[in-house]
Amino acid sequence: MSSPARSLLLSVLLGVLAGSVSAQAPTTQDTLRVTLTEAITSALRVSPEVDQRRAERRFATARSDQARASRYLTDVSMSLASSFAPGLDVPADNTFPDDQLYLNPDVENDWSVGALRPFGRAEIAVRQPLFTWGELSGTIEAAGHGVAVEDARLDQKALEVSARTGEIYYNLLLTKALDRLADRTEEVIDRAKKEINRMLEEGDESVDQADLFQTRLTEEEYKRRVVEITQNRRTARSALRRQLFVPDETVVQAAPEEIQPLSFELHPDSLTYYTELALQNRPEVEQAEAGVQAREALVDVARSDYYPKIGVQASLSQSITLPERPNPDNAFIGDSFMGTGTRTGIGIEQNLNFGQTSARVEQAEAELREVENQQTAARQLVRFEVEEAFRNLIVAQTAMESRDRSTTISGEWLRTEQVDFDLGFGDTENLVKAVRADLEEKARYFQAVKEYNVAVLRLLQATGTLADRAQSGTLVDSTSTQK
Image (tube, rainbow, N blue to C red; front, side):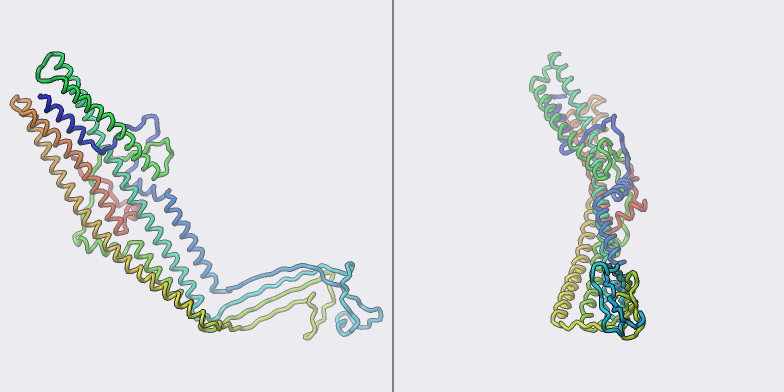
């Protein structure tokens, strides 16, 4: 093999690995092997981002429960008070019985310290609205739609976490595939150095010191790349470990040995099908629809202040002083320190500041128009994102299929050149080109598979079905044969 051809081979093999990541997992650490479905479901289970949305949903649910609980017995309260009550200063010449002491004008309260007695009072009050012109029902309805809004926000975050986890997963698989090419490059460099040194020692005039220097420079470039490769590979593995929240001493690996295309077939109705699917499932659309319904209910709440609110209120109180004071049994005379009292009746409440009411209604209607516009924008954005994801998937699928065919062609070319070379009439430069093409196409195929798989995940994310498919086990990791 001539010196220029050998140098070209080394440079090409090294250049194929530009941007790849590679590292060997420490053998002394625990290893966690996960499939794509396991990685996504685990990430959804432990993600603090998803948990935050779950907490917000629980808050909205509690608020809705509170609103529903206000439908009956809106206000129920009990108050307890304790103090001291005065004794009675009864004249010595009093002739009235205890239950008629109020008839004696000389009987007075005795506030001296020695005459004070423990006093207690308890009162229970209940208020029940009868007709509120939509204020109560609107508040309950708005709170219920608020739960739907938080449900949608939770689903939206789950989609984001699922897509991010899937991309990290396939990045890790891609690095594993490119690592094999790195190993082949190192082997070629070692063999080339040994061969050139042997030929120099034998005095072969087809090589000189320039060939050795070129090989050494190539080796130094390779060493620099290996450091970058190693650190990048560790970063990729750490990213998946962080996403799954496993201990730092655990090495996370993708379960498949090789990166393979996801088993996914585009629906016959293509773009129309996926657009309709997204409009039915995307959390942003559901969130906007729930927001519109909540704002409509709040408009009714604001308008209810134009009309009188009708309700019933009842209260029951009990006062007692120990030792007991005489309590007159009289419809017109009562003692505030002793006895039982009750009040019940129907009341009407009307807000007469109609200017403020009108302003509140206008604010509620403006907020309604705002979320209606958000709903329109959300539907248009979903349509665009689905179309973008759909067309990107077509491009990625075409690229992957093309790279698949290219690897077949490059493999056939390499085998042909190897046979010719072994038979003694092959061309060295053609063999170098065949090796270069074969490695380049394999690297590009790995990258194309990764891009295709991510494009599939992005389309499922755009239709709002990625998280559900992963959790239900219908997202197949990979079934195609690796080239």
